[in-house]
Amino acid sequence: MQVKSLIATAAIFCCRFTGLLREVCFTALFGATGLLDAFLTAYRLPNMLRDMFAEGALSQSFTSVMSKVEQKEGAEASWKLASRVMTQLSAVMLIMVSAGVLASGFLMQQLYPERAHIELRLDASLNDLARYDGMRQLADGAHEALITSGTPIDEFSEQSSVNYAKLSAIPVGQTLQLTSRQLTLPDSGTKLRVESRNMMQLASDLCRIMWPFIMLASLSALCMGALNVFGIFGLPNLASAGFNITLLIFGCTLGWWIDPNFGADSLYGFAIAVVLGGVTQIIIQLPKLWKLGFRPRFDIGLRREGLKISFADEHVRKVWMLMLPGVIAAGVTQSNIFVNTSFALYLPSGSVTALSCAFHLWQLPVALFGVAMGMVVLPAVSRMSLTQGNSDIAEHLARALRFVAFFAMPSAVFLGIWGEQIVSVFFQRGRFDADSSILTGQVLASYSLGLLGYAGMKVLQPVFLALERPWAPAGLAVLSCAMSITLNYIFVHVLHFGVNWLALTTSVTTTLNFLFYFFLLRYLLGGMAGGLLFRGLLRILLASVLLAVICYAAREFLMQGFNSWNFISRFAMMAVGGTLAGLFYLIVSYLLRVSELRDLLGKLRTRSH
Image (cartoon, rainbow, N blue to C red; front, top):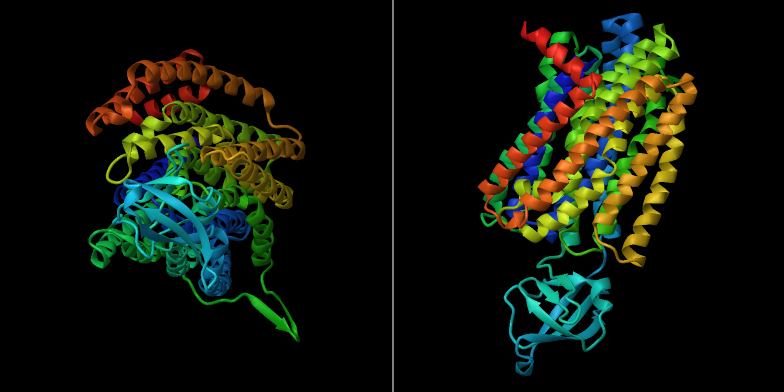
């Protein structure tokens, strides 16, 4: 199990690393600005559906059913199942893509807070200051903010706009200071970003272009599930790396061709590249599927008796029946991310970008170990449920959770304590400045509190599909989403907290989800091998606490003014510091007799001989 997990981990590392390069490119070209916020908001909707349907519920339910079909009826029957599911999925996705393209404008309108255009008047007596003279409604229903300034500002034009709710809260007659692309209240220091374009319309256009990606990603996930059944875990994740590389190459090329200065219009090139990346994901996996015996053919898998239409294959019906509750359950974290995005749009510009960058760094260790282990556990437990008892499954899960915790706990320490420094090394360049690093680092620290729960949830969630008990976690999704919306509303609109509190909401809900999954499985299986699990977790926890002490001391005494250092110094400090801290954790773990480390070392010695 650990060897297959490490293979998947290596492939996922390539995927996530190229994903980080993608984010680095975006932030360097556009910074933490409203332009990048618009692109990420537009991408978030099809990407959320991709994670919920394709890489979440669909891939997991299909892998579970196909594993059992292959075990009982052979490879030919499993490929027949794959063709039928692929045909039905294509038909469903065509309808979803068409509806999404038509509804993009409405959806973005619901997400984006109302924007007010700015009318700038000149008054020499105000010198370098400006005065807010109130708001007026135009004939078309739009709002216009009246601002009188002493000097013209080049960045302000007829297309300039600002958050309506934020500006209307300022008293009429309030003195403002106009600087490049922002309004500042001298008394409180509050800053309001002024956008040079209608961000809602831009996001709507980008969203329409990217909707076909959900169909391509769903078909790619089906290919991934089929390969996982036959023990192939590396190639599907390398396909995801292919998506990132395609997006980088074609996005930069098309974006530069449309607008060499990489302004708002260049984002259309990146939107087109998202769709091309989805095509790449499928092309990479097809040769291996063909070699294994898959011959795709049109097979709708339905039969009609009079006016009644039913499934011709019971296994196909089971895939969809498992998928339905899986969509709800798998959508918990994705829904939280989407909810966070909608609330972040009410915060200062760049908040959505900070959430996205921090989330990608947070996902890296989760994907490397939590998702990788979940991919290996699902087909294994599906087969074990046919031939072995619950105690064997419980012991299998306990070992999987310990293996994940061995990597997740120190990762949480690094991201929580060195979050700002890590963000600075990865993203602080181009238009992404030191202030953006501080903001994103705070978000990352809040995310890190839920890293262990999120990684554990990725391991346990597929097990309910393998046991054909998919509805139990689904009910929790509704409660979690309600909790997320409630907490976010309180933090943003009542307490007026910053964007890092939105990340904290995600950490709280994912941790509660994990605990629910754990205790429910403990009840269903009659135990979770508690002695085996908790003895290992306590040793890993002790090693992680000692690591936290070392990392905190290093930050306080060796990293003062880190964001002002040049890139070489920042990179060298993180490389040397991270290596030494990692070695310290491994040495302490070895002395504490953490079995996961000893098992890995034993396998490495065996392979070296």
